[in-house]
Amino acid sequence: MSNTLPYIILFVLFSISAIGENGLPSRKSLNELLKYFIFISYTYFFCCRAFIAADWLYYYPYFEKAPTLFDGSGNIKIFLQNSLFEKGYAFYNILLKTIYPNYLFLQFVSAFIDFLILHYFFKQYIPRYYILGWALYLIFQGYVFEIIILRNAKSIMLFLISIKYINQKKPLKYFILNLLGLCFHTSAIFYLPIYFLGSIKRRPKIEIIVFFIGNIVYLLNIQWIKEILFNLPILPGRAQSMLNIYLSSETFSSAYGLTIGYLERTFSFVLLYKYSFKLIDKDPKYRLFWYLFFLYICIYLFCSEMSILLERIPNLFVCSYWILYPCFYGSLKKDNKILFILIFLFYGVLKTMSLMNAKWAFYENFLSSYSSPQYRKQYLTY
Image (cartoon, rainbow, N blue to C red; front, side, top):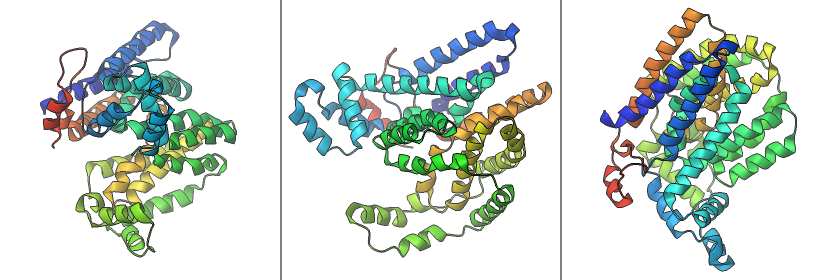
């Protein structure tokens, strides 16, 4: 429980700050003060973190082995050829190590880049409820993005930048950004067809039917994915071996049951479905976020038999929560806004406790005393 306390405190502070946020001119100075608070808190907590969670166990030695730009083209070429990770992330390590050869510097820069992108993203789509967007970001995968999935987070951030080019109908810029994201994490390939969602007309009845069928698949635990995968023709090399591991592993292929998460997603769909029509009529640019939200829900409903899919793909579309819920919040009356924040606080604390209640989550900051990588290995258990 003590491991979760720093994460809960940060979430609660962000949520309480959202209460004081208001778009009225008389509150402008308070809004600016709260935004500075978000910036300082985020920078201290995420940019200055030490060796937290487990993924640094792979990224830290990778960074240590990376050459700098001064080590010669031969060493750089060998490193890129032998890289276990995508070439974009490999060059990212080379570049940052050239600037300052310390893995904690890479973490600092990575988190700071995320902040800048999210800052402009929230200002563009939810300017009046900017801070609430940050609070939603924390509990809807923000802690995961900033502490665990460094590569995937960068491809997601590039997608956030590219969204405006869907609305502006500029396919070249959209695809360039997401192909760059593909150089950080292969999951970004799912973003390529998203561009075409911007021109698809909504079919509300079909959405309801798909949602209903998805609930049947989920609740009855109908395992259609494994049936298809087991009957696939032989895949080449590593792809086949990885597929066999995922299919035979209880960890990677176990189904999710009737959980708080399922209830939350069902509640969110019911709540946001009706409101989405009003929002999209007011500003069509939010239609894409509804589609992303619908994809997010459908992936959980139709792919629950394989937890490995739920750990990878929904992250790509979770940004819809950060935008749709603040918009919904803005449509509420004052008393209902307070009720919304109270329910949000309760759920957010429970979700944070569930996610971060592990030894690996023990928080340390390099601005104070922190443990060495060798010592932190003892925390890499649940």
